[in-house]
Length: 213
Image (cartoon, rainbow, N blue to C red; front, side, top):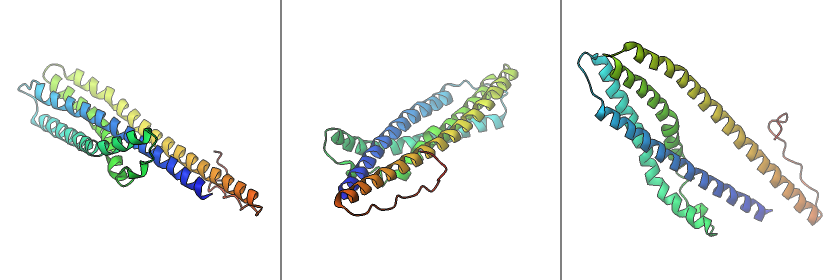
């Protein structure tokens, strides 16, 4: 039983290791792309006279916040990813070194980078597009800027709804996997008790008896 528990814990650690590596890679790519786009938009945009000062302030502040958030997420990914990559490459060669990876200790930092890059950063990126349309089309066609804002409102709503739905689905999947792992460990324990001739222990009940795994 002890060997089975150690093997299950090792598999869980390896699974978290590769999941963390995937999150950091996605965060670094997304943050690099969006921060680069925001920087280019701020440098290349042709400002004309007659644009309200409040609109220019909103554009400069939004661009600065957007770049800062993505650069922060990129910094976390760049600092942590090489250590995880090294351990993951050794792990793929058959050497058990998943426990040497810092992904468990730095879990909070990795989640912050993931949320900043794919959640908050993407939402600010959409807002940046709306403000950029106003700055670009203010002197030429205000209806064009209004149309862009009207289109982006439902897009932002759908994005927030998808983010919440994805998070709830992910939490439910983690719960189902955890409960399945507990059931598998219980079955192994019962089998070991049967083989040794002792009475099996009582199965651990589910905290949600009406939910099917």
